[in-house]
Amino acid sequence: MNHWLTAPILIPLLGGILQVFMGYAPISLRRTIAIATTVLLLVSTIVLLVLASDDGYRLYAFGNWQPPFGIVLVLDRLAALMLILTAILALFCHLFAIGGADEGNRQFHALFLFQLMGLNIAFLTGDLFNLFVAFEVLLIASYGLLMHGGGTARTVPGLHYVVLNLIGSAVFLISVGMIYSVTGTLNMADLAVKIPRIQGESLNLVKAGGMMLLVVFALKAALIPLCFWLPKAYAKATAPVAALFAVMTKVGIYAILRVYLLVFGDDAGELANLGMDWLFPLALITLTMGVIGALGADNLKTLVAWQVIISVGTLLAPIALGSEAGISAALFYLLSTTWTVAGLFLVAELVANQRGTAGDRIITAPKMRNRTFLSVLFLIGAVAAAGLPPLSGFFAKLLILKSTTPGPEMAWLWSVILIGSFFTVIAYSRAGSIVFWRTVEGHIEKPEPLGGNVSVAAGALVALSVIIVALAGPISDYTDATAAQLFNPDGYLQILEAPVVSEDK
Amino acid sequence: MELLFALTIGVLTSSGVYLLLRARTFPVVVGLTLLSYAVNLFLFSTGRLATGGQPIIGSTASYSDPLPQALVLTAIVIGFAMTAFVVVLSLRNLADNDDDHVDGHQGEDNETQLTREKEVTGK
Image (cartoon, rainbow over all chains, first blue to last red; front, side, top):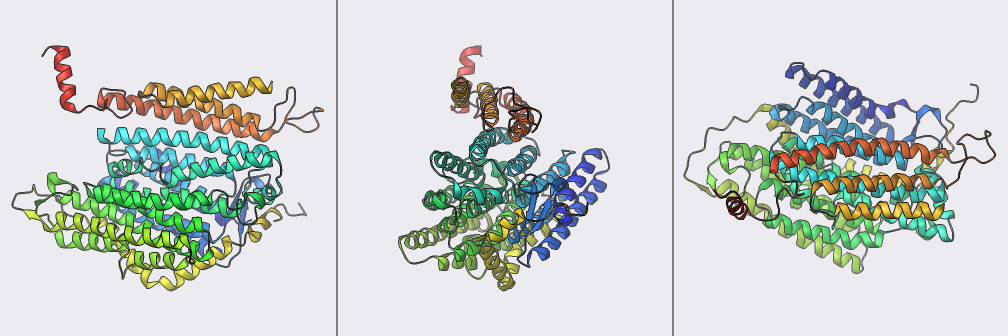
């Protein structure tokens, strides 16, 4: 039992409740308390990261119920990595939001914090049904955030997003039910013990359940053919919300990693590596689709939204191949791409604010204000996203390419990633040169000056790609250890034997 | 009982899916509701169907699995909240676009829409 594990859930929960009740307080007070909550959350995730880096598993059993009977929170390296990724991203998004984007809706900060709570529950939980609940918590907050800022443009993409995710929830419940009806448990560690023992008719039931679960996670991760809702919804969302949503697709990827390596891993008998042969080609098609979308994008935010899909494809391809080096490389890329994409969303918003009526559309327009600063940010973000040296995207993609073993998969992966990266560079250079260089004579209404908060937030997220390169050694050591831990699930299974209630009570 | 139960779930699911594929938000919302009913019944059946069983060990000779009942309860609450949200959102869509089509419009551009309106209203 380790009570620290509840901190990343309780901090945004209490902070969010506080925000709900102070909706009419002065906005500066609400902002201060909200940002303080996010900072506190970051501190708690750093503590958890330190705890997790000794390769041990930390357990928190709600109500002292012995697992597998109660709901458990489990902290391992992967969970800690996802928590800190989210907390750092959230801090900068929040910083950007208090630069003015949080006006117009009194509950913005509450929704933002509840969203973080949902994400953190999803990363920490060791129970399949609790994962469903976490998805619902983060989804209902995301529905509210997606609508934030109003305007008719957001209604239709929002409606699509909500309906799709409701169908996804229904499918999730069906697959959970199918798995439960055979195994009689939903605790992930217990499932990993019971699934290899299943035989006969029930095997197909679990197989169907497992594949349907993959569909749900693929919808969350925006894998083709379930990715077309994403560009419109993300491009229309308010910038800090879109930037925070960069981590939403990664929740799906986290769930695939967690469930399919632990429950349907190499030891799962007849169900070993379920669905992974489907995942690989789909990931490569997703990557291709993302590149085509990026080439065809007519505004900066849509371009970045397609970049989210490109990164999903790039992440899932090595995960589907399932080598330890590949997973480690994918985790490295996960860190790099999430922050870079989020930074690019923020930069696109800043660019849109400086260009008058042209907004973030990729068209020629009168010369914008603060062009040097913004173009440098865009350049760094684009270089990191496309995977050009010397920034983090390059090293991440290099690790992914290096992790493959010779064979047809290697040929496919190398060619799709390399050709895809080439066309991504074309898409970014086309957008960047039209937006920043090809200016026409004209007059722009004097735009609002660049605020300190928003510049710092966008700059810091983009600059993280430089910091990742500087800290590449420790980070890749950590991801290597994470992959090794994921491939050795015996430790995870031991939480079943963990003594929860002490004997003398 | 199994056959009846399975048929009920099947009919609810197929009607739900059919309605989900309609082009108006109202049938879509009704379809989502039907689908969530089907899912709840399905979850309920994962603890095996039994009549007269109590979820407490020792109270009766045959007892039923309490966990699916708890899961269904959670799913009902979440499904109810989500349905409420999607109803409000559909109303917002109707108000914003003067149309309850799921894409906000019928797939025709504004000009044809204007021409049609002119024809109808005679302006």
